[in-house]
Image (cartoon, rainbow, N blue to C red):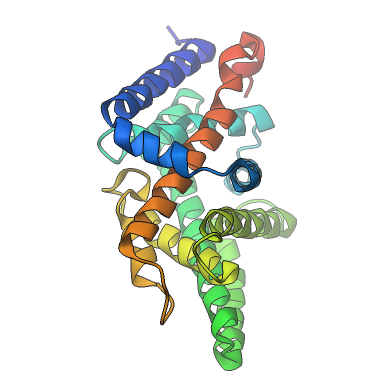
Length: 282
């Protein structure tokens, strides 16, 4: 007998929220540092940028599914993205991937096709996070030829990848996938830059740091949500003669992760109160 989608959704969300609550209670000092450092004049715009970026990631899921012949509803894409995305907080590092594949399989998308869709999305994100990150740093350093070369190579790679990543559907769908992913990456980088600005002098550099770190974190599937990996990369990309210390980097990244968690919950909590017939819609 097929299990109801609404029941699975509510159980999964409550499970993850329960685990996250346990971690926050277990690590009160980390939570206190994150909250005490918050300035809502910067935190609220950062959360808004993250939420909008995640909505664009939902659109990427929609375009990716269409690229493999799966024309699913916006609500299905929202559910598939948000439930799998919040699973990254569970220990093990693979629950985000496993969760998405399980949702697809439960909704008649076989494991092979689901894996291809997920790999295509991951490739697009790594490419665009890396490209936007490197271009941001290049603009900061004002190395024109590097900027132009990277922009040209990135565009060539993106265009060449379109047909491979999303084999079905029209070109408008493929371009749409890359466009929403690129804008989403920019918003994510800006959300980090806003938090870093009180202690960092260059918002463009901070955005580039984060996006490059995110690209590397996407490759590190052993680390849940890239935890630890992003912080290392951000620390390695400190600008020359920077006054930032390791302590500053840790505080900024921990605070940003706390805001990221708020944005994740903002995206997934509506699924708890949404009518059952809407949650189960494919």
